[in-house]
Amino acid sequence: GVGAPTLVSHAAGRRDRARAVRVFNQAIVLSCLSGLAFLGLGLAGRQAFAASMSADEDTTRQAVQYLTWMVPAMALQFPLVAMSAVL
Image (tube, rainbow, N blue to C red; front, side, top):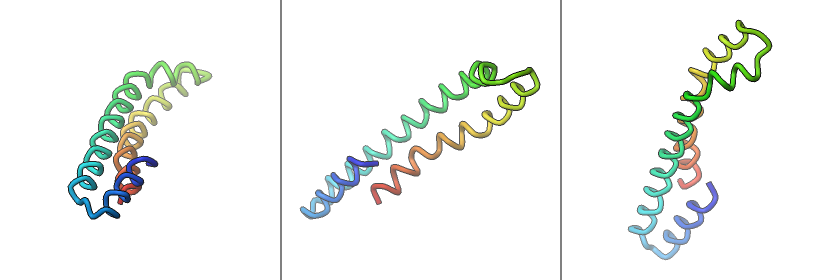
């Protein structure tokens, strides 16, 4: 969200379209990989995390259900933020 926009703007200022496109693509790929890593870790650890933060079994079950939907939505934010920052 910080480095890629700077590199793209420098390349655009030099009229180096190929470099700007390459930096943009690298930022998107890295953000997608980060999002996938977050998704895997988040889904794998949601039960343990919910159990450690909950007072009882019912709260744990509801927290796991919430995280089952929230973690994928949060993982999609990685490429969205990178794309909006670079554009």
